[in-house]
Image (cartoon, rainbow, N blue to C red; front, top):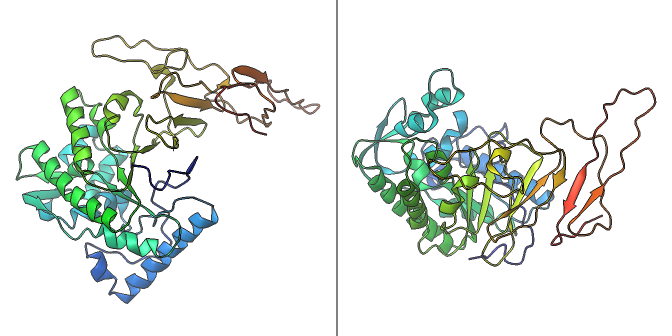
Length: 393
């Protein structure tokens, strides 16, 4: 259900994490958050850090703020995103040097940067059935919410992603392990929503990562969707889902059933001149998603290619040197705005469209280069403005 964003046209927010101040050098180190607040040094630094993070977001005029994920320790490669919950779950003893999930998913080997990260992570070993521990998501959210009048979004890793950082020696069945983790996360999310948290962001459903494995099947992806939804049964809050590490475009058929109202995606190989706005099938504002895409995955009309197993994947020509916005042809389609072609130099002029009519192309006058300059001649930029959008000054 829509709560926070019901009456907002384009809600603005950061994904969640925020740069940690250099003076914030205290860590939880596996302690309970409530117990750590009894430590005067940690308490002062943590509260000051959260206040600074929220103040910066308010100064930027964001509609929704976060606590900057300040609960995470300062560790290699964002280790605490996985290990904040792992260090507090029951049934875990010891650690290993590598993780089966990561090794299979990323094909890690010495020389790759994620190999170094993997060695620093030291995945935990599941020796007994997993049980709920002092994750204390509700306490974390309350501390941040009392510092602002704006709604505070709380984000946390999802169960299927968390399972990839565990070495299973008890269940011997990935699905049973993930289902137990989903039930634990569901209890946390329900308690969080009951305390008044209006917006919960569940992070990294691994559909797009699973599809890179040769043994991936439709049943695997359907199970991931079921596990994601299992975490959200009875959670009375607006739900967002965040993902990174690649292009989820071809996994849309499995994303549609997710119990989420917005999708925010950021890839490792991000191109800042790409922007897509997805029109959700439910009523409410569209979700703004900055994601890259490969031109090879779309036909010449900008529509996604339907890749089927066994079908040849033809290479598509490079995108023409133009900027176009294609009107959606179906509820699940995307608008796409390309500000400049790949490998192009940043333009030395500003393109302004005034009084543009929907569905027409408008050519901006090319700036005259200064005499004697060796500026390379560029083609005029084209903008296609769909009828559903209003050209702004």
